[in-house]
Length: 242
Length: 315
Image (cartoon, rainbow over all chains, first blue to last red; front, side, top):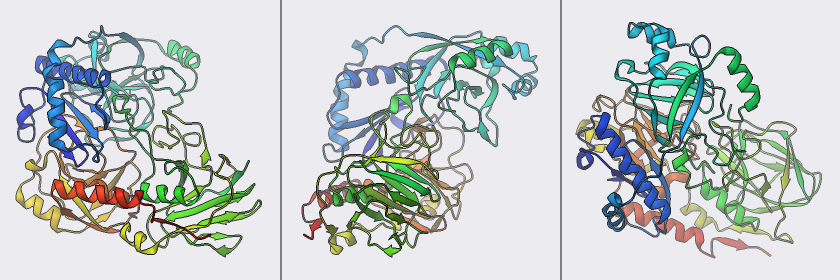
């Protein structure tokens, strides 16, 4: 699928051929399979780069491939990519890293915790227990540097985003939207429902690897107290992204 | 070594080069000059490699005091620049002596003026680029726009001053456009004919809230068509996404790397520099072109930019 005169989109999943007409979002096993293929293609293209491919942007079930117009035409590059797609099932993905993210839930850290609990007729404690009950997959990083799209949320926690986004969401805020959850790496506007905040820096220029999370990682949230939050925040130092 | 003191920063002045490419998997968009053609030409006028870091001024320019000898060039929009109170030309190299003050005023045309300096603006690169990414506070000068009192270091230039300019007929061919040519977006088929007619037939106004992340457009809304939530996917530079309110947003250099709105069109590569010169309240239109035309226009533009005849040495 052509995205612009210098990029194309490779789609995976049952609606890969008709993404523009059937845009029903994937869930569950289908989404996992599609995303696994995205990660495999990204891995292949990173280990055997195509000259003139300038950037790759993975997402849930697609990979945006940006290329040098002076080197490639869409159809020629598509043919080249097909050779990679044909090898996709041979490649294995590396063992995922498990990253634990401490979160102070509720109060000023998670201004939407009570609202989300009310929406689902639960107590805030139940929401916290559910949010920390699962290990999430990092489907991809996007939106802003270091923002990891994590999923899937337990079905009972799935919550639509705010109709009107907040003008300012603080760095480290942990939110949910639809079947996804994520951590805001820096202060941005945002429409996700905020359950808590982590003292960890998600994206740090001084750190090797920069982003705390990489595509394919697994994430486990762990509840911490206000005191632990304050202690870990001073330990981590100022979030340069804030 | 020359140091530039920021006496007044202007509305928004940042350090920019041609951006950092290839960090999509980390969610990092390239950033870089909003009008890369102006940046590239300015650098060539002062003898730099065309991707050297320079200052990008927005709508209202700044005042800068030079602490040493330097070759400079002002390119892009006309901010009525002067050196020690005497007007200086755009698109030409100028020799600046130690202690001289360069002042750029409010724009008379376009949105951005570049101040290129022989040797470039010396900041610590982040992911291989000196470009400022404002939203995340990364790159450039402390990840932010310049403030009064900031001191900018200048890199080592290319030796003795050369007087250079750009031939007017070539400059004419690189003029920013108000009719933006576009190719169909990846979801263009969810927009019915009525929406396409409005999109390509009407005039849009650049909204005040536009910035380096995106240009918001005001005008006739497109009929609600793309119902429901779309799966988030990677978005290209110049993508024209349509919000639930039916108004288009053109994603720009500091764009979010992924998005969930349907995209009706994508501005062609040859017209991306023009986006950098659009001011709030400017009026634009879109013109659909085929893929082969988009490609040809870009290749012709690059050929012109690479040609030896573009820059004229006057000494």
